[in-house]
Length: 93
Picture 1: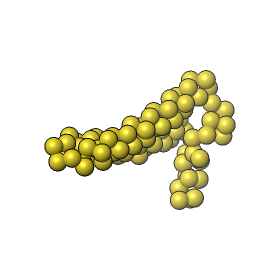
Picture 2: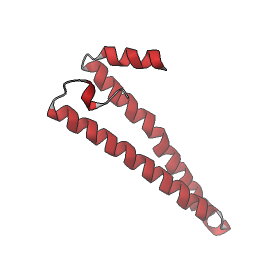
Picture 3: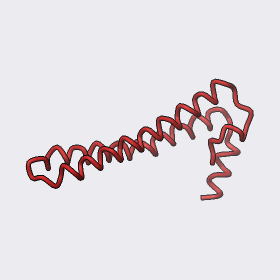
Picture 4: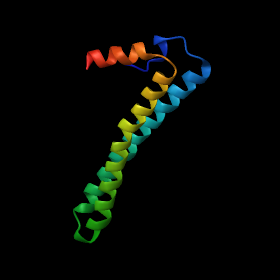
């Protein structure tokens, strides 16, 4: 994984930032899954289909935010001058 804190000598602030990104990423997963689950239940009733559809849309927005969050982390890594890890990841994919 590109952003493992043990790959480099990171400052305490870098490690906190890494942990924050990981927590937010996981929270997005749970929130999106919860919205999809609630939307699925609501979609079974005709009276609740419109709110259920909005929950599907909100869940989709959360799922779409995950690659955005990863891109922000990668750009921060590139800005810190750690192009070696970025190029190694590109070669693996």
